Each structure stands twice: as structure tokens, then as C-alpha cells.
Image (cartoon, rainbow, N blue to C red):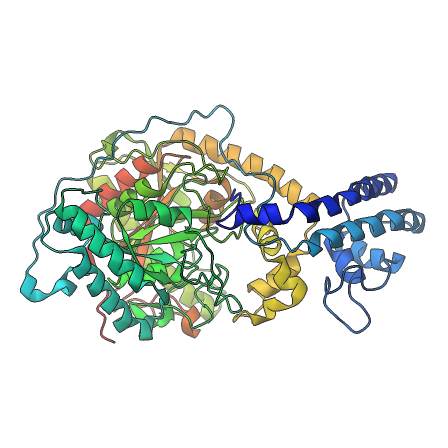
Length: 631
């Protein structure tokens, strides 16, 4: 859980008087419980829905505009909500409920008047670790791969280094064959060259970057080498607070928002000597790839979006415009842009990397990870940013011990058999369905080839299946937490400022989430306990699971916290079926990347990455990069 961001401590102090005033409503809460219990309902009524009805006056003003405004709660209002929730309430029960509901209304309005900012988290934290699991807490020195053979021809210019891995760049910087200042200027120039087409930068941090780069060069010259990230330019998703620069969350209405302290991840990368050169684009409030300035584009096919919500991180990394980047994932926001843009992503175990100073979307699902050009790059970044900070209480003191020479051959490796099996085309399928099947059938060739490559490496693949569990039924948890995180936008109408306003976009989803009851949220969290247990049983049978990057595994592992490493798995040929129409929403088609995902049990991130690195070494797909024939 994100306990508080950089401004959290000040916020808590400033709110003490408001909390004291709100305490008078404790007795009304008890009266409500008594009334509902007498009616035989427990807490099954949807209070948010009822409050919305009661808080809207005859002129149609938005709920919450004025504390206590609007008509009294009536039996007719209860009828509307009861019908929505499938509850039967008698006339006598409705009369009995009115006093308690009025008290609840007052209590909710009092909390709304506190205007809780995004920095304040709930007074609980989610922990996916099941009972009996023992975490490895013994931290060992990071063991990176042997120094690569890489040379730099100064006459070719630093841009010739744009697509090298961090491991390769680190060797050049460490041996002073290229300077951090040179790399920083080169990547900044590439960002400016390709941003007009790809739209992946929200804010440049050039002044900060040039100072950091100069400091890095001076330290390295003096023999004070901090490690493989020292002097390497990087870009951060613009939900990470950086002092002195806007932190926009990609959302209209937040363009000038700023914080007076760096996010913890930024602090740790500063300590590692990395050089922040830009705050990269993200879908508005971490949704998709549309931000207030544009849609971020896929460098392999700029007519397509880059996917999101770590849109700029995926696009800029794949385009060779940063050495590495930081992304976040709640339900696919590292996996999807890594896949779309042909980058490598590591989404760590929930509770490995502190989120202090990052925008909160879902306190029980948000994770900060790396998007890079190789698995080892990701591992080196995670090594620098993981571990407790005493503020994000979800973070365990577990070890991430990266060893590039780990003996991955001793791992038990499973694969989700049904996900690799070809689908059967129904004889009565529509033309659109047939086109979709053709695309899936084409992409299945890459999945089959991946299994062949793993077997050729000596991996004994064990067929497994995901637990039979309705994981998708738990995703309203995310929407409810997101609606709470940005409740003020719904109450004030500021959600109307967001660029995307369709049925699947946040403004509408926030409104829908208000009708998800507290009881249903708790029941879903109880079901989540069963999901965690089911996934724990699965990972007792194998150490790593190989799978296509989409499907039920993506929802399941984001809900239950397991790590994922997403790697490029080839590029579609000219014979690939065309992408579906739909402008920026389209994906796939000739000349675009595909990916493969490696999953592991909780806090087994390093060994999952070791197998994924071995696969990269054997296949070399991460060496492919887009031909940027535009400027």
C-alpha cells in the first residue's frame, strides 16, 4: 500500500482538525448498522448510489457540490437502489431504514468535505503472501554478466549507441570510452527528433540531467563508480514525482501539478547515478495511451498507438531514445506496451518496489517496474529500486538477488497448454471473427516456435493450466479503488476535462464504480484470498510458467501479485494478416512485434528473469529494433 506520497506527512498534519470534526459521526454509523440489521439487510444496500440520488437537487447539480444539499432520502429512492442490487425491502423495512440512512448520508458528506488527496491511502495494506510462505531475506551482491565486447567508433557519433543495452552502455561509460554527457545529449536529441511523431515526452528534465551527467563523469574519472546504472540516461513515467518539474499524471487539469519531493524510485535511481532526462507520457490517470497532449505512438507502426498506460516508457525505450525507463502496472500497463513496442518488461512481485511519491490508482494492485531492451537491464534496474522505505507498508523486506549466471536448468518450467493450443474456427463465424482467427493463427506460430526454442535449450516443459477461478469477476476492485483515488473528479465534474470520455474510459467507470457496494468489495477481497491460494498451489508444482502475454494469466497474476517478465518474441512478416481498423486502437499487422511472458511465484523475480535472459540469449529477438523512417 502507498501510505503517503511526498506530500503525505504535511497532509496528515493539516487534516487533524478535520478528522476531529468528523469523529462525531461515529455514533450515526452505529445507528445505521443497527437499522440495516433490523431490516435483515446487513450492509447490502449501495450507499454510494443512494447518496448520489439524495445529493442531486432539482436543478441537476452534481452530487457533493454542497454538503447536505438536495432532497431528503425517500422510500422511492430506496426502491430504485434496491431494484439495482436485487434486494427485496418491505415498506415497513424502508421506514425503519430512513433515520439510519440519513445519518450515513451525513457521515459520507463529512468525509467528502475533507477532500482527501491522492496521496492519502486507506488504513490497510494488501499482502498477497499466503500463510506459511517463507521469504528469502538474505541479500547478496548483484552478479551481472561478464563485460561484453562492445566498441565505440567516435567518428560514427554517439547515436550509433542508441540501441545498445544498459549492460553494454555501462561498460563503455565505466571504461570512459563514452561519457555520460555524450549519451545524455544524444538521447535528448533523439527524443526531440522523434517526439513530434511518437508523442512520448510530457516534460524534459534537461537541466537536471546535464548536471547529473557531468557529476557522473567526474565521479567515474575519480574512480567512484556506483554501478552499472551510473551515468545511464533514463525516462520515467509521469506519475513519479520529481521536485522542480510538473507531474501531470497524463491528465488534463493536472498539467501544472507539482510536488516538493522526489518519488522514492527517483531517489534510488539518483543514488545509483542514473540520469533522468524526461518524464514520459502515460495514458490519462494510467489508462491506455491517450494523454492530454496526444496519443503516444508505436515506433514500429506510428499509425498505431503504443498501448498503455506506460505508453511513453514503452515507445521511447523501443525507439532507442532512452537507456531504460520506469513503468507501472495495475492490470497490464507494463506487459501491454512492452508487447506492442517490442521492449522487455519486468513487472515485479506486488510489494517489492515502494510506490511512495507515485500516483495511486489501486492500492492493492499498483506495481512499479522496468521497461528496457534486455532482461538483464530490467534486473539491474529492479536491483536499484526494490526494498522497504518505511512508508509504503506493502513492501516486504525480501531479497532480489540477481545472478546472471544462475543455473536456470534446475528450474521446473511449465507452460499453459491451452493457451498455446490452436483455436477451432466455427463454421458460422462472421467475417470479422474469421479475420480475428486468422490473426491469432498467424501469431500462434510464434508461440509454437518459442516452445521449440525452449526445448532446444534443454528445458523440459511441463503442461499446466490456470486454476478454474472467475478472476475477471474481481476486476471491479480496481475500478472501485480508482474511483476512490479520484473521487473529487467525479464529485466536482472535473472528470469532464479528461481527453477520453467513452464508455470504457475513467470518467464513466468512476461513475459506475460508485454503485459497487462496500459489501461487494469486501466479498470480492474474500474471494481474492481464495484466488491467492489457488495460484500458490499452481506455483508449488512449477517454478516458472511460460505463456502468451495475454489471456487470463494477465488478470490473475495482477490480482494475486506474481511477477512477470515480458520479452520480444519476433516480428510479424509482410505476410501477416492486416491489423484491424480503428486508428490508434489498432494493433498488430505486418512489421509489428509479438511477445512471450515468463511468470513465477511470489518474490521469485530473479530466477524468473534468469530463465527469460537465457531465452533472450538463445533467440536474440531483443536485438531487433524499429527502422525509424520518420522525423
